[in-house]
Length: 146
Image (cartoon, rainbow, N blue to C red; front, top):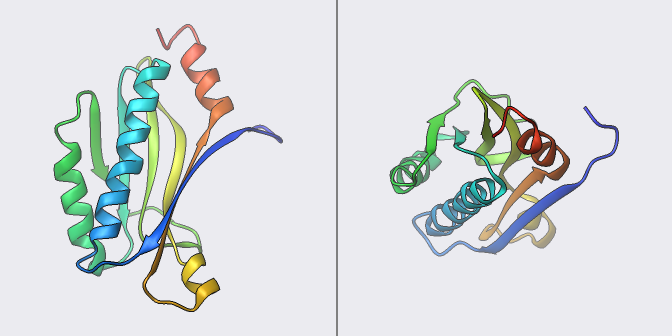
C-alpha cells in the first residue's frame, strides 16, 4: 500500500423522487462510468461487487444488476459478507480490474448520509465513488495486463 496516493472521485447529490429512483439511476451511472473508464485504460474485464446493506434497497441492487448484465466484459456479483465500514448506507460496491488472470481492486463507493445529516432533510441523497489512480496505472501498465 502507498502512504500517499491519487484518487479520482465521483460525487452525485440530489433529492429523492420516490421509489428509490435516484439511487437506481445514479448507482447505475457510477458503475457504467467505472466499467467504461477501466476498459479505456486497458482492462480486459471488470468485476463489480455490490453489497445490499438493508432490505429496503434490494430492488435497487436487482435493477442495477439487470441493467449492467448487458455490458460486455463486465460481471456483477453480490458480496453479502462485505464489512461496509461505518459510513455506507443502503448499497455499496467495490470495483476490480481484470489484470492477466487476476482481478485487482481499484475502486470503492456507495451511498452515504452526509448531506442528509448536514441539511436535516431526509430526502437528500449522496453517492460517492473513489478510484485509486496509482493502482490503476500500476496494474494496467504491468506486463501481465496486456
